Image (cartoon, rainbow, N blue to C red; front, side, top):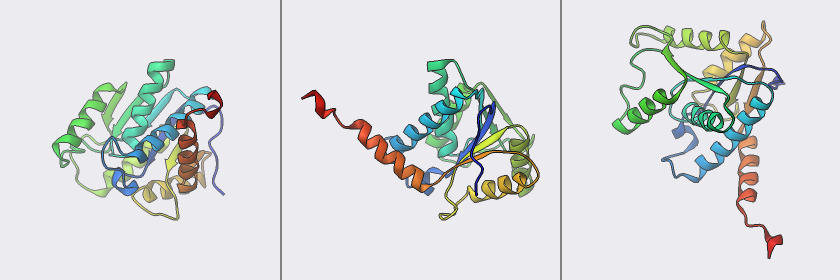
Length: 197
């Protein structure tokens, strides 16, 4: 079965579905509140276990939301540091103005940002080099992905599981069952306390 992330990870790669794959449109979407709740809870658990760096990409969806959660936790606890690694120099330039603005704003807030490739997009090899960079510069991964619901994260899931065949590299998989549990938990936490009446 899947390896669970263990204690003592100092640098974690977090990635997962794009916002459109989760049907999240806009910052007021109720699904986003649940996802941010789960990301915050997960990352705080890792910080308690020694996490020092959250390393992610700039994709719209889990990557940007995870970096935002990590920044909020850092404002509260002083850790973790955040790094946004992009696969190539012109990443996001084909996005609409709002999404480009979000990327630029987040890039300006993280502790470190750079492109793995020193050139604009040329081929899929840059994406493979990016994945290799992320694997070799982190101690483990958190992947918001359900193998029963394929999407863009399948490529990262496949390369992580292949890497695990030869290297100790823990991966915590957050699937749709985990997201549903988080939704129930979040809904419960938002209810007024009936005992106070």
